[in-house]
Figure 1: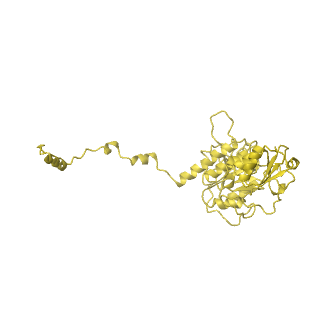
Figure 2: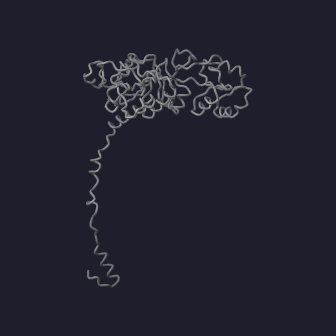
Figure 3: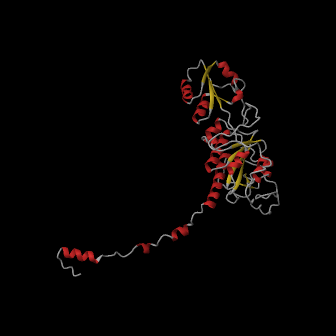
Length: 362
């Protein structure tokens, strides 16, 4: 897992800001309150599984998302541009929703890619290379650029609604900056059945072609909420019965010892700095992955996968208690009980002897 800031001296890793020997907080009791959500970020959205979440009201149209730089001109306000042959091919491969494509009118080497765009129903417009130069963010468009549909993020309330009132997992990313890591974490979260993923609006990776690729399309099947204040989002989750656990290599307890079941908000830190001091202050407990090797740690995406599966293991054990091996073997009869003396039917033997007129001395 990514590096993190050290815990404050005397901080109890199981909860609260008490002394080092203070007992962990008792689990939050009662059903989650679904009304009067103080501190909820944003209004009610219309996210449904398998669909993209709603657009935010009042959001500036065309603003770059997830810290990505947006090109100027050519209708840049209605979606982000993906440029370059390989990037466009990857966007088609992962099924990223595309609005239109601009192709240099003098480049005949793009015929194959143009056919793929046509097959995917993406309108293709032939334009002068100067037009592509004017919208390129780094001057390496290679004669092609596609305009992607703007990704529609969910709201925090959508995540809470999907979490319901029972066991639920929410993954909160504290300024993860790499789209590949974001996509991989979303994929793991979706596979274990997480209620949603929460990311920061600023200084964090957003959902783009990189996230689409590494998530294998999972970004379309799990709510991804952008919030302006991660600490405020954590407090809202706590009000709805969530325990908040931070993943940091500086923790005292391993993931096997931490309370990873129930309603859990799993906090993963950024690739370079780990969990920020302010977000760490809002965690109820921290935990780390045990290790025996020499490598310093796993990266944030790998660590998140292990943590997500530990939550799934805990909640699966609590709801589907499997019989012990001792109980299972107790139901199997012993070998001596299975072997029995063969039963001989005397009447059959008598009939057989009579048929052959033989005295068998029966």
